[in-house]
Length: 171
Image 1 (cartoon, rainbow, N blue to C red):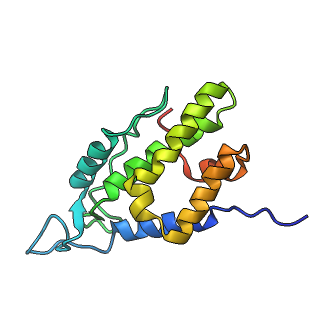
Image 2 (cartoon, one colour; image 1 turned 90 degrees about the vertical axis):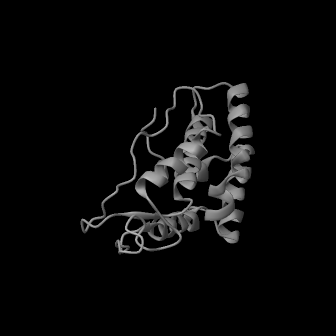
């Protein structure tokens, strides 16, 4: 038997790269802009929370799901002020939202109407900053394949994604 491939493996790498790119752990403050590491594309943890709240206010979670309360750290591992790439808060909110709906769609306890509604909602991910700005074109193709396959009843890749990337917090 062949090795099982995760069609979203590239997305896992993209997510890791996105996290590394958006967390400016090497960014330190300077006298010209002490709150954002002197980087024009950097925002503070508080500004990232504001982005998250603004984006999440546009999104509806499935029943019995809640927004994750964990705020991004304002201090990096080295003790220096932590800054984030502008837009990270919105992308993170979209990611949390998508995971919530992915978990809902995969829930064996829901009926066909709820599953259809969850799938319809999942498809709207294409209108989010998460999809539009954080996924590379090739990864969008893999993402779309996973979503399309799930709509046709093959949920293996989506299940793997949810197991690998979606927190059970917020339930």
